[in-house]
Length: 294
Image (cartoon, rainbow, N blue to C red; front, side, top):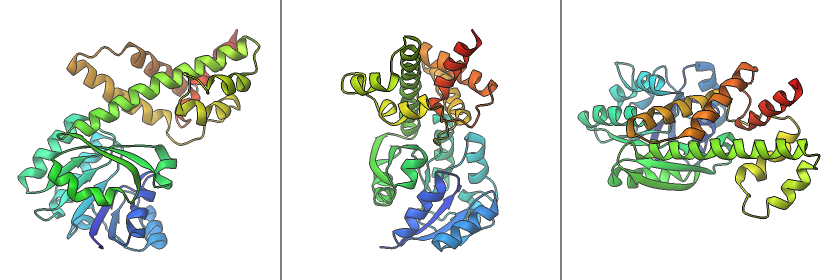
């Protein structure tokens, strides 16, 4: 059944996600800070673009957002032009931004005072997952609100799970980023070591990927890493933003994340090399650059 929805933020993730909602037959209104991108989306998928988040959200049953960070999220939700100002009582706001658990709780409280439901629902799967409608969504919020939105999630996700109250989705995404950081660094070091030892690194992966060392990163990134190709979506700048959130939360809850902290610094070195927009597998390029300097 068609539902009136709004989607705020048409970046590499939001653009295809909103598109899948339109393809499912929902009435979609979009807002993007760069209006030309919103116009392009409307030309491709139909629906309508709006001049402000509030205008996009007016009359919608569900409002989705996927923006850059905590400050961007506050900018599109709060104030006279923010989405909350345009939402009716009983509507639901769904945040797909990777942001802090703190801002999720803050905005959920503001939304609740207006009679608006709120879910923090960061995603994993990257640009390819968004384009293929195969994202994983980790959600925080009330179960009753989650159950209302769940059918719409399946327009662009292959896996959706409620993790707990508001903030739990963002905390789960932090665990995701912690694990990715360690795995990518381990893979980078393994490939670097293989080359230094005079081995055929691709042949090594062919063998070890059949055992306990196997990972998604190994299966999908080892060859592009060996070929010095680092243009596969999730940028180093974005990863550093996420790891900053992780490390800040760790200081609050007393977690000890020595590997994550070190990998974050390695990513800062990748940025210093000019690799801000390289994907996260570029940790390998950092190791190779150090070899070249010897």
